[in-house]
Amino acid sequence: MATRPHVHVIDPDFRRRAHIAYELLQRNIHAEVYEDVEEFGARNPDEGAVLAVDNPAHCDARALIQILEGAGRLPVAVYSEEPSPARIVNAMLAGALDYLQFPFEDRLLDKAVERLTNEGDRRAEQACRRAEAKAAVEELSARELQVLVSMVQGNSNKEIAQTLGISPRTVEIHRGNMMRKLKARSSSDAIRMAVYAGLDASDDRHPIAA
View 1: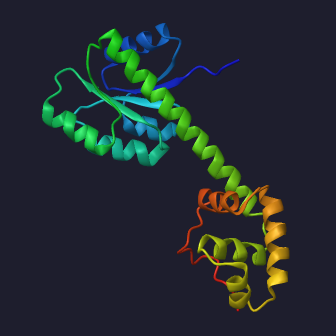
View 2 (view 1 turned 45 degrees about the vertical axis):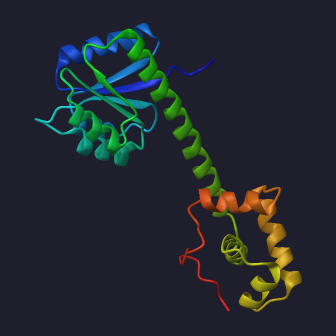
View 3 (view 1 turned 90 degrees about the vertical axis):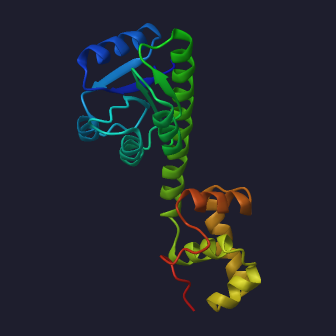
């Protein structure tokens, strides 16, 4: 059974919150409501998407999106009763997926919610992949991790062997063990998992020992 989409509604006006929650419920979307960004941050949700009012008196769209993106890495759309071109541009440049005028037109709300939920699903999948990759990389031995980092740096087995002061055959053994633990079918798979786990070619957290 598919999970109902989640949308987090942030608005200090309880009437608007209630109206939007009702509109979302009519679309079989679960709505969580918050009075402000602080309440949202206190709950710190890690799934779904955010639909928030652009209220310059409390928090403008750019600051709002920066807070929300940093807190939960959830996709954000904003709305207001009287959107101006400048505020719309400001919000979109800050990363908003959409900017709606309240009250919402059904067609525009449907499209915005679809974009939000699709982007929320995509980010959730990426977060899952990152978590799985990080857990797998943490199972590697120190030498296997050095080999993986060196692969990310683009080094061949011979170059890795020279850097580590071991034989190419030993590198192959460590590389094979590393690939098995990561369940990687190819070098590109292993490198992709390393990137998902937060390693990159300039990573200096795992210095290669001589």
